[in-house]
Amino acid sequence: MGFRIADPNTRVAIAACDRPVLRTMIGRFAIGPFTTGLLATGLLLSGCATTRLPDLRQPDAATAWRNAPQAADAAPAPDLRSWWKAFNDAELDRLIEQALRDNLTIRQAVARIEGARALAEHAYAGFLPQIGAHTYAEPTPDSSASYFQMGFDAKWEFGLFGRGQSQARITAGELGIAESETQAARVSVVAEVAKTYVELRGAQQRLALMNEIVAAAQDKLVLTQTRQRLRMAAAGDLDRARTEQAAAEAALYEPRLAIERCRQQLAVLLGRSQPADDFIVPGTQPQLGDLSIASAPADLLRTRPEIRRAENEVLKAAGELGIARADRLPRLGLGGSLTYAARVIGHTRLSDADGIVTFGPAIDIPLFDWGQRHAVADARESDLAASVFAYRQAVLEGVAEAETAMASLEQQRQRRDALARGLAPLESGVETTATLKRLGLADGFDRLTADGALLQARLDVAQAEQERNIAFIALYKSLGGAPLPATEPAVAAPGEARTGESP
Image (cartoon, rainbow, N blue to C red; front, side, top):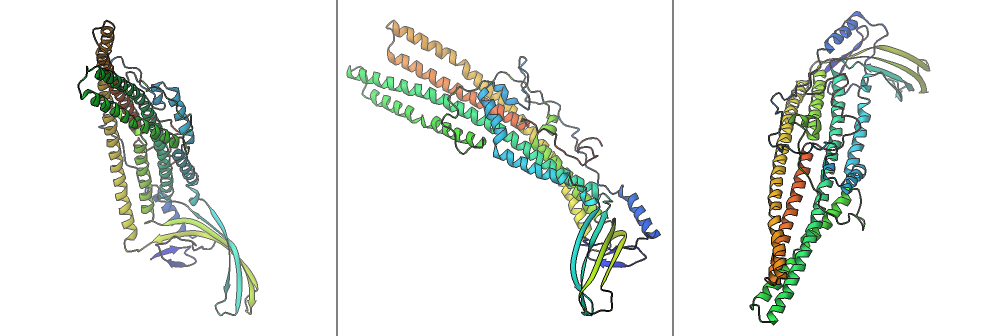
């Protein structure tokens, strides 16, 4: 239970403190010295009641990446906001631009931002003067008459003891969470479009090479049949040639299925129900040159949406803790009402119509609630500590993911380069075999064997190039690479330094 104190010259009402105050006790217009002293004391104490934001700075954060590319002649690092342009592929640029405009996941997140902004713009509205109207009918205590009442109520809660600032922190944190979720959607969609496009080009390239392998297997089968008719082939050679041709044809299912899967995935990412007939004509795999990384681990605090979300969770938790602490202190404000009552039916000695105006301070003081408010404050304090740990965990996970992606990118580059170095001897062998065949020193089997080895090597190089491109995409996804919104996300209440920055 607790007391709601109006002006001491009037009366004191008892009300349950575990539910919101819908109607305050209004005193007469005259404000006594006791009430004036309470208001002044509240104003003095309100500045000391605000919950201080925790310091989220990382003094021991690394200043450079351990697995960053070390090539001396590396090209300039791609721009984090348009990193996919390092592929120099106009079709990929067009797809990403369309996805950023039409993707339904992004549009959902943007709609949530609009709702959060609408609430954030009115964060202080609850601590501004409020006016409402009411009507109701009520009988007299002796049931001799019924009166119809109508009037206006006005109240103004000051938002002292950190209530106003804490509410602003909650709405700013919710807005920041919505904005970080939208940016996370942008990062994910851009990366998924780029990854699916690379896989589509890789599947198209594999299909073309496998078709050449099937043609070579068919030529080998025809040649084996000719040699068997001339009794120049062993009994099992023809069976082995037929088996090789069947295996080559069966392998075609994988790139064909991958092409259809990628086409469908791209259609969904672009907000379409199905791909058009001329959607993504066959093309070659995008090529990446040597790369460098311009960012540092500390930049993840600004660019990685998962970290920005965790930061705003801390801001929201601090606001909720401030509200819980403020609920243990009085609510101070002003209130007034204009009430008019008229007799509807019945007999009474009172006048048939009457009205009254009231105005005065409104004070709600919690006195005794079995420790419930203290328990809520303790719980919110634990939530704030947990959100700080979650923020630090998000930073560690972000750095680890980026380091792993850099290491993977470097290993895939080395693998691609090693396989590419093996192409030159095979190409030279094909030319040598062709020359020997023209001179009559080699037969068609030798040429087909050399061609098959070269096609398989090119297939391995194409797969390695695709894996390197996917590692590059994973790296810039881990760095939070994507076009930023038009305005920077709000991560602090008005007049406050952002969490993790000096106040």
